[in-house]
Amino acid sequence: MMFQLLYHREKAPKSAMTLQLRVYVPPHPLIKHWLAVARDAATPSVLFRSAMTELGRWLTYEAAREWLPTQEATVQTPLDSSPATLIDPTVPMAVVPILRAGLGLLEGAQTVLPLASIYHLGLVRDEKTLQPSCYLNKLPEKFPPQTRVLVTDPMLATGGSIMNAMAELTQRGVDPALTRIVCVVAAPPALQKLNDAFPGLIVYTATIDETVNNQGFIIPGLGDAGDRIFGT
Ligand code: PRP
Image (cartoon, rainbow, N blue to C red):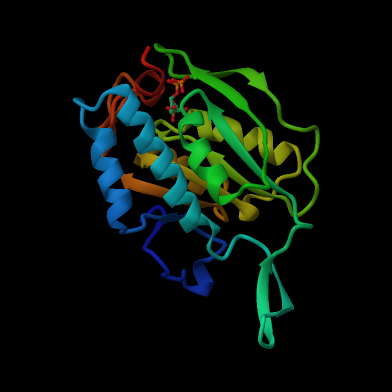
């Protein structure tokens, strides 16, 4: 198998941790429900956007597990002191939505990561060659060491766009092992490319679909997420 397929709370065996891409498909009813809504061709834009927001929220919640840096503390309750675990506010957090469609997942991701900085990256695929090109890059010149980066894009199809995004990030000092990709439908070609180039990376997705057709669409997929989010 080209990557490790894992489920909620399952831990990768230590020996394989740095050798293979890990792909988590959380078996959660809310994630399954909103995926079904997003897949349905009869779902109108307004509801499709809700589905993206919900998927962004719950997949980011899952991705935050064992990724958000914490610190131990003691808090005073009204009755006694208690040991406590808090999010460490000193570790920089960033969300990178890949425009346009990645914007659909952003709002939900932000509810889970309210303190994260948002750096937009605009990529569009050429309809014929399927090669991505960049039309907006708001990434900082360098990310501080230890920055946790969450990349959002609902579709990983041929993998051209996510590979382009990962190259931009790693050139700027981002550690793939501290990076999480949140997507909705992932296809084998993209997962294969990520596995070959960034084996320490972890992907959270609502599903892994079978294939990508000649036009670069994921089958069965959910159509063109960008068009469905923005009604174009
Ligand atoms: C879609 C999608 C991904 C990309 C996936 O974006 O949102 O970013 O294609 O395809 P790939 O894995 O083959 O690169 P698109 O270029 O259609 O732009 P949009 O988000 O603005 O609609």
